[in-house]
Image (cartoon, rainbow, N blue to C red; front, side, top):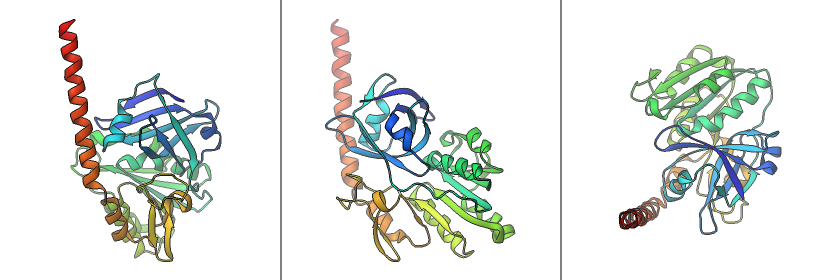
Length: 290
């Protein structure tokens, strides 16, 4: 079992958990992920490691409650525990001295971009970071991103905080001014955002890495659920990634695969919500009887 020792709600749907997982914390590196399971009947959920503390033996996970499994995960409290935490999985980010780099984080993607930006800064790079979300309430870790960035740009779609813009707007402005000075770019967030970033950077010829979060079951390359298409052929996110060259990803194929089980996921969530509502009503009735 893996105890939850800290929990924080960044918004109604975005949660942070610090989990005791010494064997993962000892070996975790930026860019890697874990697969967690709440209980024996629970779905295996891939989550990127947002931070790790080797001395304390803990890892930090940040996730958004979207479907049934992440909603169940979000209901866990400090003192409760996850059944399994498998990892660290995937190839870590290639950290080196590149010169000037840009790190782009969108929505929950701010969490996994943070350890990458921190490691790049520790490697003496000049780090320009751009973070964005639909609205101010969905932004988090501004202070932590500012600490590891030479320049931090904040965007919201609705203009409730920072610039009213999507992340590709300031990105293109920077590239127009000093694109020849930018050595490499990392972008993590919704697939449609990473696609847009990759399209912008392609015309400048700047290497752009994206971290893909696909449907995943076993995390060992056996099931094939996380298959993505690159220019050179199919790859598996769990063992070949999660980072790939954004200019080589077949984004149309990826977006289609991400939507493949959308109807089933919707039905599973609706069924779970009905069950939870029924259970809640039973408990309230029991309280009234007592």
